[in-house]
Image 1 (cartoon, rainbow, N blue to C red):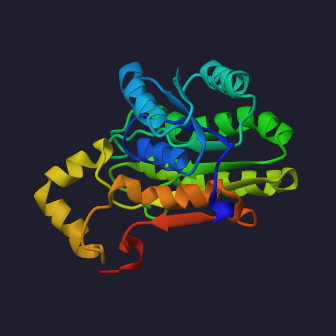
Image 2 (image 1 turned 30 degrees about the vertical axis):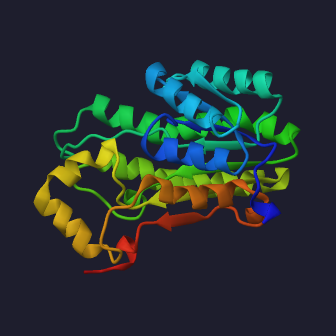
Length: 254
């Protein structure tokens, strides 16, 4: 089990102050990693920082708007200054909005693409020198069911999450020689702020539940195992892959 230990590792989790990001940050901390929460809401971040510290891990929160390249660069630099290194990056920050393609504004398109896709590239690029210096690293990008399926009402979201998978594969190829493994996690339906509208729509909720063999939405902590695996030495020969955590939703055609 030593291969799954993250003791001595340092991880940045973007958007790590709530939902999926928070669950992953706590999971990595539970496996021994020290954590940097990179997010915009200082109050939410402070609560998660204290929760992780209570686990006996070092943790700091850094205010970061992932649409700003300078914020991304500063977050990596401050992490290395505080902890001396960077081993793990989880590109989790994400957003969504709903609009038909014919009525979607350029601003609505750009916000989703910038946060869900471009930020992951810029953060990975900024983290690369520190990971090379550390002798290798792990990058985890957060995809979605929309990495697999299309969406007539959220084209920007499905395009961004499809792009996350191609970014994962491309970085994995480019950086394998540097002992940097790049993988993705594609969550199914989990109870988060982003899916609240789906749980409140009773008809849509029943449709999702009926298609999901597990018969329920996932709990965010159920993503921690995949994140720990992809952050650890246990996955040293796994790169460019997408692990689907969805209770069987994507394998059920009905």
